[in-house]
Image 1 (tube, rainbow, N blue to C red):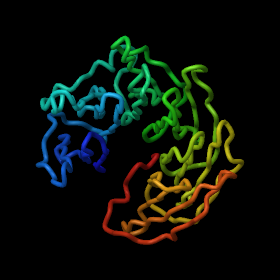
Image 2: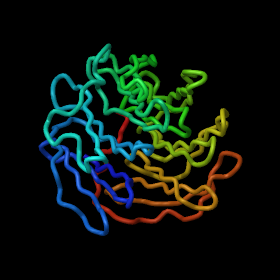
Image 3: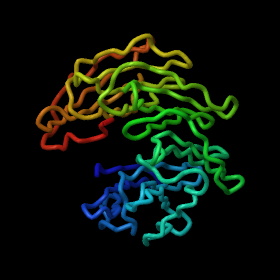
Length: 307
């Protein structure tokens, strides 16, 4: 699978997790300037690993769909007090599956928040492809009920959290191929679904660019990257074609700059990696500040496709 990585800890370390050819979850970390040996985390899975960092307790959570007919969601985590993973056996935690969930058709989408809810998880149901949302309540030390978000979707769900009391869901409609948006806040609950229109070839990449701003990048059916921004509670009026031809879903990363900037990377024809940088403008648009350049080649093009 595509590797997943996360920076965490004090002193800082970079943890990398990937799925080996036999579906075993593997991990290594860059710590104090040295890479550790690759270590098997015990479980075999059928989705990419999804990571999130619970900053308040400095815990790394790893989520994936198990490699069985049941397709249940499994969970492992780093125990900072013991300086080790919770388990290196196949017996990852599975408590989230209790209730209405009958297994997942998708990889899980997960965010960690510094709130009474520390893990939000969204999956697409194995049978109906409908999204289900569940929250771990750290105060009560238990899972809340599954909440159905309605609709049927393609690909994997996308989930981001811009503040500790809010999450935002994005998914590709199975019927229309348009992008659907649903938000949840502690005070108001769910808002939506909102149809952001379009007909898309990939799942989106969403970045929290600034306070109250989300920037969304997605691959159109004609193979170019499009962009739209959410400013507060208002979406920019139209999708903007950035003129970047790609064969993969885009990957957007918020850069640590004075003005909010985004690094945008895609895989182009022949497996080349194309990178560019964009500055977020006050009107919800983007200004290209580093032109498109090739930074590598030979990569797989089959990444995060909606269909």
